[in-house]
Every structure is written in structure tokens, then in C-alpha cells.
Image 1 (cartoon, rainbow over the protein chains, first blue to last red):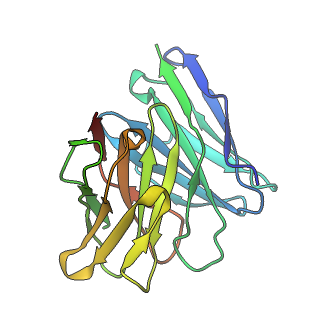
Image 2 (image 1 turned 60 degrees about the vertical axis):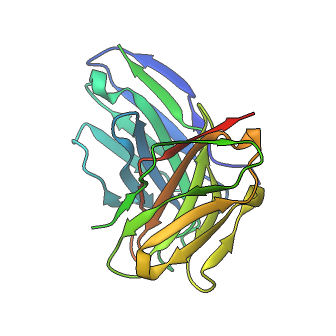
Length: 115
Length: 114
């Protein structure tokens, strides 16, 4: 079974631009979570989508948004980019059989650099 | 609120030596606990997880971890490390209900001396 895929793997943007990152979960997985990883803040939860609905959101400004499609693929968008948005953005998928926390499988990440 | 502490930012061990990485968590109920490993520039790979039952769990690559409720700990161990184990290791806690959200520790970077 194919793993979680993320595209693109690398992105370079300038301040003020916007960016869209894509995540394809493992086949059959219904939940997609997004995390931001930086050297200073570590791994931080952005948001989670399940059945096309945002189910939980971390403590990030409204410039960070996401969505999920009917095939469980997910995108996240960052508008009005700031230098501090430079990070590795990780997507994780889980089956979520309704039993609480489930094992999350991570993609390779998208490295975003904001100049 | 959930939180995870990994007290050791960086650990260096010699190849063949034993390893223990510490993890302490804060959570109001029995947590779901995970250890992930990350090689440079890569995503996270699951090493092992604890949901319930036997408090000593076995994972991939020869790793094991022991859940100790009384100490709120979930330490990762390996009896003999290999040079390929050099990476960053993250402990994480997940909620038993609701959304799929992990709270991670700050990570422990492992260096292996030849």
C-alpha cells in the first residue's frame, strides 16, 4: 500500500505571497492532520480533517487554512506569507475507526522557505 | 492539557552500547503514546505505540518502550545501537477521544560514535 504523499517537496516563496500544499493519505484513511515543524517551536499541530470537515485546530492564525476533499486528499493554504512561516510542513493520515487516537502515518513533508 | 517532555536534547552513545531515551507526559487519563524517528530532511517514521495492555511494547528496528503510569513515563530503549540509529526521536501523546491530534516532545537528537 502506498504511503502518504505530499507535493511539492520543496517550495520557495517571498513574503506576502500565498502557498498551497497538497497531501494524499494512505488509501482508506479518513483523517488527515497537518503539523508545522521548526527548529524553535518543534512539531506543532495545525489542524485535522475528517470527512471533509475540520475537526480540530491548533493555535495558528487565520492565515493558515485547509480543506479535505471527498477522496480524503487534503490541501493546506497559507496566505500572506511571513518569514516565520518557513518550516517543514508534515501531513499525517490515520484510519480513525472511531476509537480515539489512532496511529498517524506521516508523509515526507514539504519544505517551505519564505524569503 | 496534554504535554510531553523529553529532558535530553542531545545524546551521544557509542555503537554497540545500550540506549535509553526519556519521555514524560502529562495527561488527565490513560494516554495513547507513540515514539517516532526522523532522519534528516525526512518525515516521521513510527517506531512503536502504546494504547493499552502490556506495558512493555516492542517496535521496529529492535526498539522497545515501557509505559510506567506511576512515573508518567514512556522511555524508549534499545540494547545495542547501530550507526544507522543516528536520528532525531520524538515522543508523542494522543487523546483517547476526539480528533486525531498528537502533542510532541521537543525531540532528542541521537549521535552514534563509531
